[in-house]
Length: 193
View (cartoon, rainbow, N blue to C red):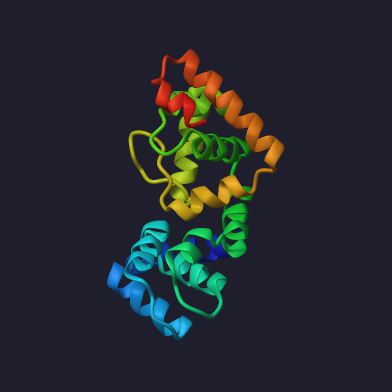
């Protein structure tokens, strides 16, 4: 919280511009992977690393840090779940209203693009409260500003899911399947739960 207050204060200074890093291209992700791991990276592993991180420099760095040394293979890139990303996302969610955390879990379980009404129902909150929670998640760079909730990066969604205990995750998926059935969702979506 103190850091965001300081950044907000600096950003409010007349003439100040808040700059953020641009996403890395797939080829840049490959260059960073190879430079940091001191080994060649499979092209498919580079594409997967880019897809999981969206090219976000912080997420790319954390993903590479979790890979340690060695070659960047598809299997290794797919399997790694950097604990540092889970801590970053937990810290962001802890700074928001509890409804925002509940909505993040609901969107993670339902999958990107679920209707806000579905996510609100699964989170156990009213639609208006869900809209406010979604706005908080958008400002916190957890979700994209889109008509239906979508995580900004797949690794962020994975971190939210990984924070759930197995019993809670299973119970939430069961509730999501029942909710989707009640909403008349296609069988494929229900079965995916």
